[in-house]
Structures are given as C-alpha cells and as structure tokens.
Image 1 (cartoon, rainbow, N blue to C red):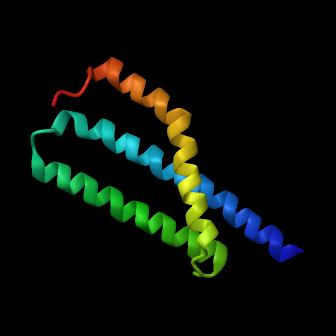
Image 2: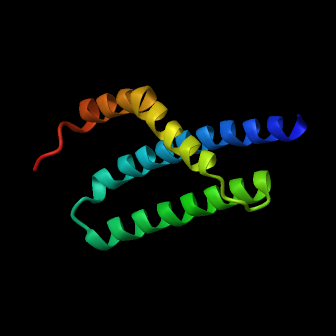
Image 3: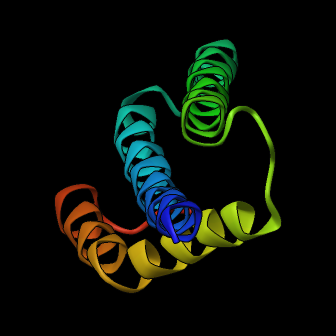
Length: 105
C-alpha cells in the first residue's frame, strides 16, 4: 500500500512539475519581449530555460522515483501543462496582451 501512495505522490508531483515548467515558460516569454530583435539573446534565454527545466525534471524523477522514468510521470507533466494553460496561463496571456499589445506578425 505504501508503494501505491508513493507512486500517487510521484504522479501529483509530476503534475505540479508541468505547472511550474509552464509558469517558467511564461516568465521567459515576458523576458523575451524587450529583446525580440536580438536573436543571440533569445537563443541564450531559451537555452537557459531548457537546461534549467530539464534539470528540474531530472531531479524530480531522480529524487522521487530513483531515476526510473514512468509513463504516468510523463503523462502527469503533460496534464500539468494542460491544467496551467486552461487556468493561470490564459490569465497571463491576457495580461501580457494588455501590457504589451498584440504580437505583430
């Protein structure tokens, strides 16, 4: 029974990880706005985000499940991303549009 509780905890932490990853992605999106035309800075910002995000996921999997990647953990991260996009993500997008206007193509 304890193993099932640990796996449930791991799944819930995976959902939280997805939410945190998307929150970080939105923060990076706000940081990108003033430097849109400087391609090298955009590259560096994206690179740093993905390295930190990958490290965050690795540490979560390593600490919670002894480094064993489980399918339900990946599904949990995906679910966290979807939950974020349907809730706080929509609000932040509206805020960003109000603050900076709509993105020009």
